[in-house]
Structures are given as structure tokens and as C-alpha cells.
Length: 143
Image (cartoon, rainbow, N blue to C red; front, side, top):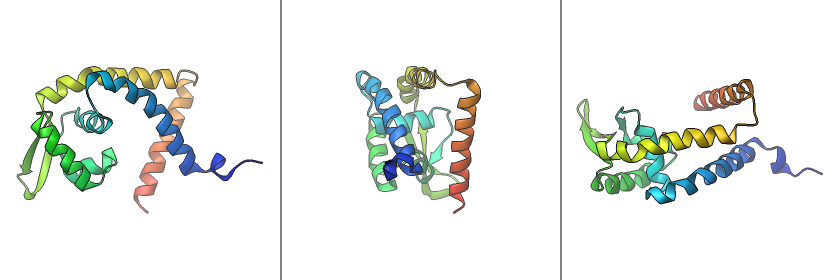
């Protein structure tokens, strides 16, 4: 008889994420980056500055936890923290040149890891899974 979690969406999503991520996170160790640092740098790698609140939502951290992490990352010169000129109460976070240099090779490794994880699926299947997940995220934002 199947167990409840075997067909429960939240469990399946979490378990798949944990297993796929665990494999890649092992590859981060030699680069001296924690998973938290990786998430922040990968998110900021496109160059756009984000508010701490927006970044917290994307990297899946509570804002106070992220604030402490960002302070350490700024001290290590991986990110830059600046007051938002439009609202001085908000802090904007941007990847630094050193952060970009550190994360650049890892972005390629992450994409290669993704391709390896999805190699047994057709391009159409991969596109469909990603589209469903993106739609699920969009729909759950409005609740």
C-alpha cells in the first residue's frame, strides 16, 4: 500500500530538490562556498541589485538570517550593500567583482549538473516540468 508521502506534492518537491541539490552542493566545497553563499551569489550573478527582502524570498531564507549572512559576505567583499536611493530604509544588495569572479565557474557547473540530472528526459519533458513548476510558483504567490 503506498504511503501518503509517496504521492504528496509537497514531499515530492522537497525530496527532489534536496536530492538534486545535495549532489551539486558537494561540488561547492572545494570552492570554499557554503550553500547559502552560493544561493546569494547565483541569484545576484545577473548583476541586478535586489532589496534584502526580495533576495530573502528568492534564496528561501528568513530576512534576519539573510541580513547576518550578507554582513559576512560584504566583509569578505563578495557583495556590496547600499542604501536604496529611492527609500533609504531599504538596503540593496549587488554582487561585487570578487563575488562575480568566485561564482562564474560555478554557474557553468550548475548548468552541467542540471543537464546531467535531466539527461534521461527529452527536451519537451524538461520544458514541460519547468513550465509546470513555474506556473505552480506563480499561482501559489496569489494565495
